[in-house]
Length: 398
View (cartoon, helix red, strand yellow):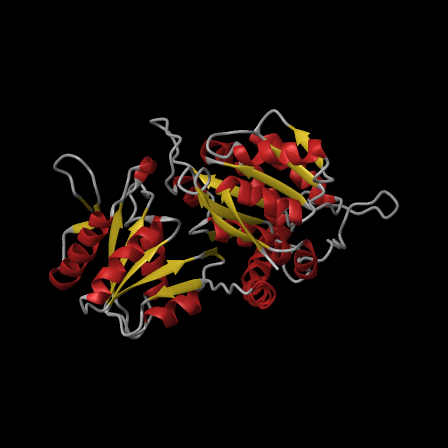
């Protein structure tokens, strides 16, 4: 029997990490992530969690410590936000290329300048190509569930890649919501002990991460890419096993009221739940409008996304990050590319909003739907349009 408790998103992460029985935690505090390492440090100090908590001097050191822990076969966990994620950027490539299945929860935060502690997805998009499995959460139940799932799939011998779990800073990390916590026996059944067969051991010496000259570097990277793409089937299997045990099933692409829909909103993160209110209203009035929640970001669920949109006329993409000088927001650009060679593809319209934590209201999504359909029908000179920006500039031209 699960128990229903009220938890802020940060503490939902900490509870999942505790129930995963991690061996090593290395983290450096940064707003709005700080409640996660604080709660985990408290758990270790109180004897609730038998783990090594390593206090470090920076996020770069935190990621490096997790790399070292994972290299010797320990279950390792890290957490950060915004600028902290950027400070550890170079070490992210080490973890993925060395196939160290550490898990990291990221409370999304807008990157400076100007300095911001509030959520957008600029930090997530800055690390999208680092070779980590990446998932976005809509609410605190998903925050707990995806953290457990991340350990399960990342450590699978067929995968062995690190996993990032994104939760919007403050909107989820500091907001209390009801969360169903399972029994420890159920978690143990879902998440076996880590058996990392490449663990460094002085009794059985091996080399990790040696110098790679040009005559082997390309092959190493292509092998990593092939393995990374193959991991998707294990990720889907992990969600199926999670649902069979805990009763909550997840998918890489989640459809909401998309039956016979001709217009679909595409979102990531907690704003999708605000947008669902507008979808509900439009459906009640008979409009064929639905929503796609893009949960799995890397590896990109190309097949599942194409299947979801093959009969749709218009896709309206809502990005929470600017790709400066690019052909639209990062998600919009990626989706346009993913759909390019479809025989019948929907028109794609891009919007950018919610930057630096700016509120995006139900009314804003009403505008996004109406304006998106108008642009799809009549066209526009803008590469993408902005939402909620003061002043005259509402569109960005090429």
